[in-house]
Image (cartoon, rainbow, N blue to C red):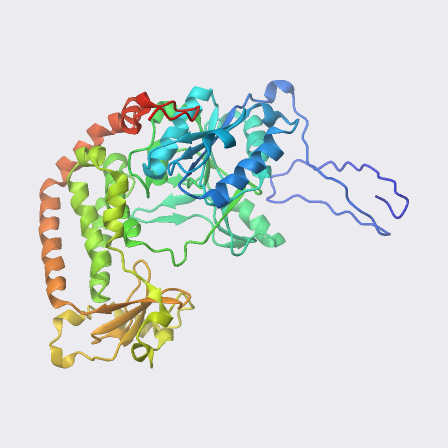
Length: 517
């Protein structure tokens, strides 16, 4: 609206063709004005517009606070509109917890599918199968514990409609922004490294700042061994038909392995994103140790995109750090993951993932509120020495000193102090030099609100060391055969026939949500 006249005027600004990361324009008003609406549009030949049928598959397990608002937003802002997406979009909610009212929440454009608790891998496998039955051209896999703007779905649909031939088979990844800091982009596309880690391609970016918006667009995500995390990843159904369904890994590495298997061209676009709770302080050894080791070794066996030798060296280093910091539970779960990997694909096929997670979850360290701990134990603790997620101000000389094998278990009791020391409770957290020769360590979370007390146990230390040596010997003897067994089983374990049997789909209707059991 211009000035106080009540008159609205329409302005059209033609943007030039450009390879720049950011093209913009400026509107200046000489008086008080209001913008009623704004949009970007492009004019193309109708023959250049691809036919898109997009299936959104979100796997949920008792996350009603997130999933129900997302369903309502899809109904209100996507399915009820008059845009092209409204006629070519269907939302499948795979309910692993079976706690949703499928009849009430389902509609013409939304289907709630009750499912066994088979983890994210099983939930997304079922969502892919539902997308195949729907006749989708693309399936969009999305986490349940996210906030999402329906605008992301619209941008996804429109981008897919306008792809050129070079990107017709590309995976489209949505960025993960922080729920706690909504302007902070934590990750876009990611990459698997040769040393057995996966890493984000882009640094943390504040996407409300013009220079970082431009930087976000300028960083190339089309790199070797790139993949899209399944908090928001759009996959062409042609890739599903060619490469199959996920491996039955339950959780962790399922999306990574699928990317390594497909080796897709990756693409991303500003404004296609979700808001997700940060990962800091969310360490769970049952997932971050057991599931990670077992599943990453399976991925190396079937896809060969990382170095097996470097991964095993990293495993030994992590195991040694956990022992040094008296984190016996995490060290044990690392070895559990290696042992179950060596059982081969028959174990993966027959294991009850839900029961396995419960069994391993019982081994996690239990953090208690600091106020419930012995006050005398906490007095005099130097929390700064634990480096609780803060800036690392250690000198290079000190870092080298800490890198030496200073395992307290190798010292006589006369050299061990009774005074406790603080450490950071996290994956791979290194015990600093101030923790040397201490019998007791207090492991704090990043907020210093919860902690777990660790006490030196020489017997358990020796048992874990001996178990590692035996497992490593077994691994070196059989690793080639075990890897070959996984490669041979791969086509069957990723087939629709396997998943129909695994999910018991002969006993229920996969897309209507009607449970015959």
